[in-house]
Length: 233
Ligand code: GLP
Image: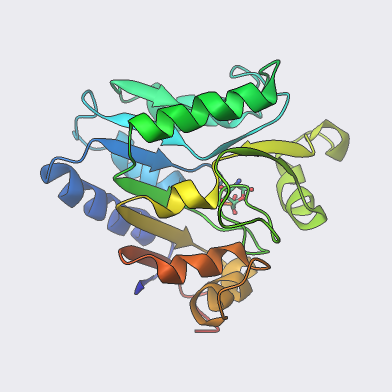
């Protein structure tokens, strides 16, 4: 694991952007994208750049169950706002949270991932060590699946909703097996609330209880952390 310490999320976004630019110069095609507050500075860098994504494909990690793409709280809407409305891609994929048949949606999404192997995967991390929405206890062998969100994740993410009642308690998530197949992974973590998860990701033995620990087994991963998130390293 390569660890890059930065001053703050602004610098982190720039470092992640530089890594992406370098890979795009080598001709990569498929980006795995994440939502949440962490990658916002990265998307800002992209928006302000003249990097061309018109031949690129993006595949997002996850989506809340029940939310449509035009729901303001959906991850699809977040991606439109932060990136897709600003940079045209050849194709963009986000799991369909309001699909009638969720199992079928998982199968459809896995086919997309299989047909478009991910070259460069962006990750944030949950306070409990989740990646995507692969919560503690998730099997490392899973592909796209329906997840029951844990109390810790509901607590962390409810601030984005008008009330806790409105926050979906289930999500669709790309599985860890798919995440691990990415050629390169860039995980970003900022702020003290991530310090414990970052320490465990790097130092704890690999365990389903802390899903991000499996990233120790990936041979091309860069972790970008600010001073607060790195405080226990
Ligand atoms: C969410 C997302 C993750 C994200 C994480 C951290 O639950 N499913 O993909 O990395 O939590 O979010 P944030 O960056 O807002 O702290």
